[in-house]
Length: 174
Ligand code: 4NP
Image 1 (cartoon, protein in one colour):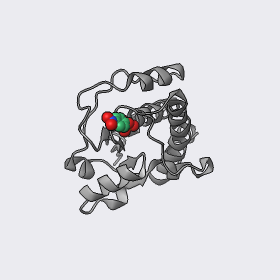
Image 2 (image 1 turned 45 degrees about the vertical axis):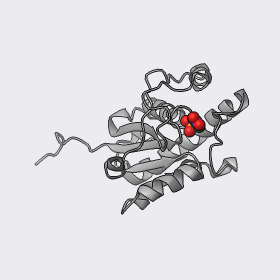
Image 3 (image 1 turned 180 degrees about the horizontal axis):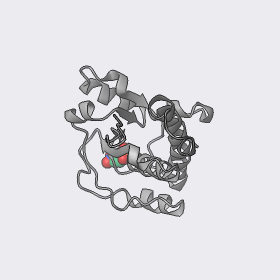
Image 4 (image 1 turned 30 degrees about the vertical axis):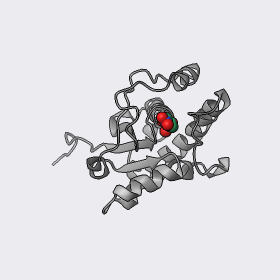
């Protein structure tokens, strides 16, 4: 019996920072665009959240929107939300932007630690182990956040493809 009609389960990825207005919406948009470029959107569900609730319901930081827009990423649909305990079960990967985010999420985990990842572990060539928080900094910090997100997104996608999508037709593996 053919199973071609079976829906492919989506790989669910949640990017997490502190406020969910700068780094994690940036990582979400960069990763989403990369997935679209590779024709893999049907295989993914992508979102972002913050460990703090300061900005719930707000748009992304205007500086993040502006810098991202210059590179072709649209952050305007984003609205900030806080990570919830249910997210830990729902998502396959929960990807922290910095070490504080990582430990704050780890404190919520009961059995889900293996899902918890450090974003910059996927771009060791950068020498960065986290994306520095740009919120109280200038334009260069927002550019750096984009540079690092672009590199780590590639590494993360390679990791996920290898682990979950290795049976795809050749043309979708590029
Ligand atoms: P994010 O940046 O965690 O990258 O979204 C921040 C946003 C807001 C604040 C700190 C960092 N804040 O203190 O309000």
